Image (cartoon, rainbow, N blue to C red; front, side, top):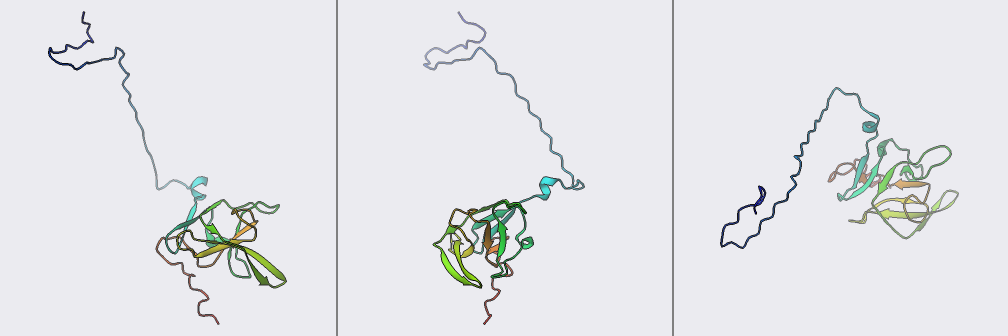
Length: 167
């Protein structure tokens, strides 16, 4: 007995055909994309993330604010990134791709400072330090050395060689 959904199988073939008795509904999708160059910037577009690279081209840092606008440390002109909340300020939002080194102790005016230096995972260039053992964000601040990072892969930052000829 053959119904309307049973195919006719030619004689001499060993193929089996199976047809489901339920038919799937037809799927229709529609989408519309709209954009305007005249639109006002939104809060989310103003809070865009900035990406920084080592001079070898390796991705190192993504942060919620331009490094050029952050304060600098007086002792070595390093860029200060707040990594922990305090009573007076919120921590910056950032992700760092760097390898921690063994600590070193530096003589500073008024005492000694222990630095846990961080370097590029590809070329080992020193890119910054913190004053507490790893992981990153374990110390109140992360310090980025001047000239270590650039926003354009393959392009040297303008301050990459600052202090090279100083005596």
